[in-house]
Image (cartoon, rainbow, N blue to C red; front, side, top):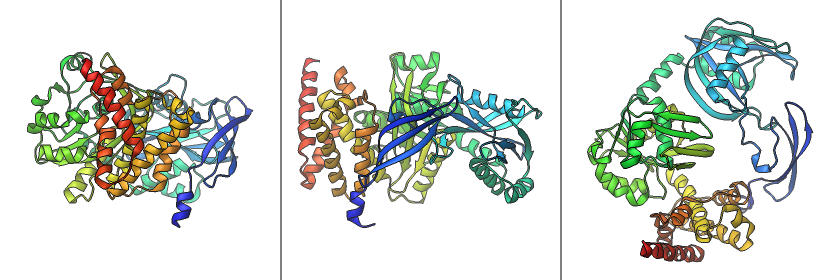
Length: 520
């Protein structure tokens, strides 16, 4: 694409929405967008939900789909769908009730449509959209072994004929029958794959490893809670009252995405007592990394894979230096999560998303990256692997250079920053200054990456959102100011890049922190 044209492109922006029709199950909305060239675009969509604000659109999953199998046969439902006036092969599915968790919904819908029950849930994928060009309807996908006798429990307006099909039978169906899009894809890959049980055996081999999570605040607590559901040999590294609480009550995760989770790790130890592990996730503040690496060094063998899940651009590089053993995989995570006073952990908002990789990695490092990806996905954690991990790390770092620094400097919420024209302009300058430093360091940041970060600030981040740096300064705790701002200012000086807004806010925040330290 021509460079001038690419720089002129913008992410479409939803300005307003109006409900035009309201029925029991469906709501019609007219959406007013600004398109990539700055023009107006009127769009129509359908939803199951009543919305009051544009930013709510697309954020609420509406149901569950069940991919059920018994032995080496796939469960499919032949349904008459009034919307298309045809019989269609589909998967058991339905709307999730208020207060109902995903697994309970899957069990209920499966029984109502087929009479079958779930014997074991194997995997739950995060919500995906069914027809995003027409509707924001989305559903979790539950993979499960099912059992029982097929029976009819449907309502008068439903016509559903469930049955189990082997690969020869689904091959015939695919060639001549109508399918829903999701069911067609599942059926095709069922036909092409080896036995599903074989896939699950491979997953079991991955999760039956010795895994440790070091640091169980917001990020570490979320990872430990999710890994603990799947991995029997999980060790949590904690100390003091937190350690005692986890030993006594388990690790409790309150997740808007995954529901209420309580796991009991196989062991809970302090870092110096950690035994040799296969995988170690380090989830601590940057200023603690060196000390933590010294404490856990005996647990890192040649085969151990270490994954620092931390802020900043160089925790992986530093971990390699401090440990000198094992394989270090770089990572980043998008998540809103925090530890509570009772040592439970709360995750809010969109599902957590991880990215892992090793820049210019060798064959052994690439294999380790793939292992980590499979492990996290087996634990129902959204994770992708990338060859250019530095681009992804810097995309998040640039966001934090603005998000954390501006909220902390003015002690404002994101919404308050947005409402003030001068502060909003400074926020955008922070983004662009950090982007210039990334380019000077030969990181392939594109103009659209910066525009995406700015658009999130303008239109997506919650009005009341605050940052970890802001909360730490408010509470008088030790901060990661040097990670979010000091590092950037020093690197800018090294490359001769002017960053006046970043420098002003860094120096101002340094003074605030210094005064707090004097008082303490």
